[in-house]
Image (cartoon, rainbow, N blue to C red; front, side):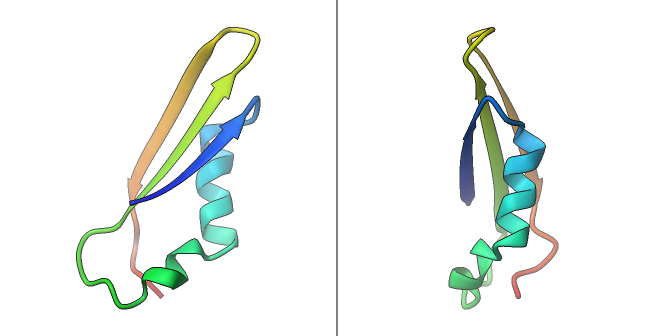
Length: 59
């Protein structure tokens, strides 16, 4: 599982950052299921949002 936390941004943006910066590269030897998790906390509303998706494949 790769988790990216954001503050007053978006959970989608967190997942996009995981992909763009290729955080999964450190796990290239891993052969199991890899999940990408983006979590955002909204300071104004005090709520959070979370996006979880299965990685299409480790590069």
